[in-house]
Length: 382
Image 1 (cartoon, rainbow, N blue to C red):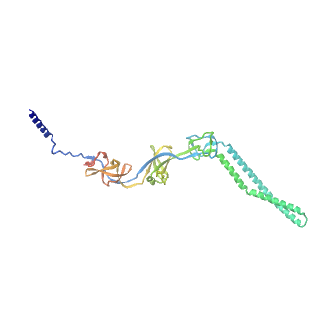
Image 2 (cartoon, rainbow, N blue to C red; image 1 turned 180 degrees about the horizontal axis):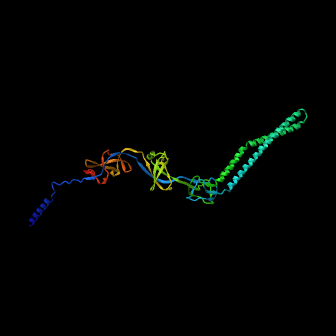
Image 3 (cartoon, helix red, strand yellow; image 1 turned 135 degrees about the vertical axis):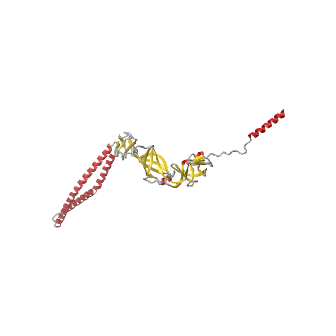
């Protein structure tokens, strides 16, 4: 019985092997053909742009200060207040400067009176000198005839010399009169300017951004007291690399966006020599100030030099894998994964520097789902 059981097991194993043996002629299953969307490669003329952003600043900002020292007596503005050019912002105690102006004006008036007096005295002295000169001549003639004494003639001559001295002094005084008047007028004008400087006025129409002093504070010429800004136009300051700077010129019109607001801007400043540390160029773009304010984030579109006759494909055609770029090219119904050198992106197009030729059919949709060597046909084709 044991031998019969063994024989039965062996026979069963053989039958099982026969039933489960592989088919000698397996049926080949044809791979599925994918429908792909393709586009022919062509050359383009592209206008690349780059967006840079920065904060808006007032087109003009200045820190005002007094030109004199003194105690603040009036504060007529507060931060946020708009002021016209020439408006008074702060006032300093002016009694000392008012007295100085009055003193300078009085000295000028006194000197003008002295000069008028000296001119009148000079005219009288010249007439007296002429009369005395005639008297000396008369006495000299009589002296020859021994009709007068020598002492009388000497007295007449001495008086003539005195009159000559008076004329010389008065002539010198009147000759320098204009210079003395000029000096006193300058002192009076300087005192008048100092009195005017006790009131701090705005040099341009704008808005008060900050006031750093209170009534009663002692201020000095080096101390900023008011910050004034002009927000009728705002400036966008950005740093750009050399490639961008070479494509820009002062006065060029640019598109600036602040949130959802689109504005027209113009270049008013472009640094030619780059910063020695960052190798970037400072760019200033001015925009109208309506509806925006300083501190807001703005973006500006900067155009680069046009790209002529370059090969470009839609961005959706590019497959990136481990830092490399690929596209799928359809050749005779088979997809071929081609490595390419990608250039700059311009809008929805990707510039291809090498790897493709004009007329190549490249897949432009769902490239991540395809493999190299996969059969495919153009979507909508046979």
